[in-house]
Length: 43
Image 1: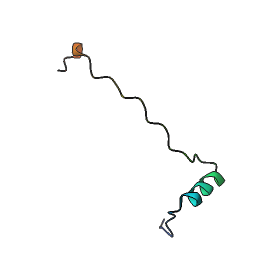
Image 2: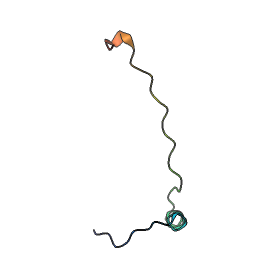
Image 3: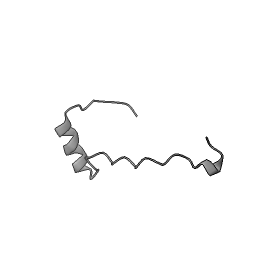
Image 4: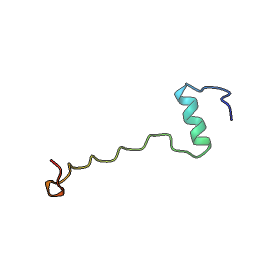
């Protein structure tokens, strides 16, 4: 496999992703985890 081109225009990238039925928006970040509980021995 080798790189044959770089696509930098957002609208072009969006059209390509839509044509191959891939999401055009990034996934939402997962919510932050709470700190570890003290009962587990972490300080």
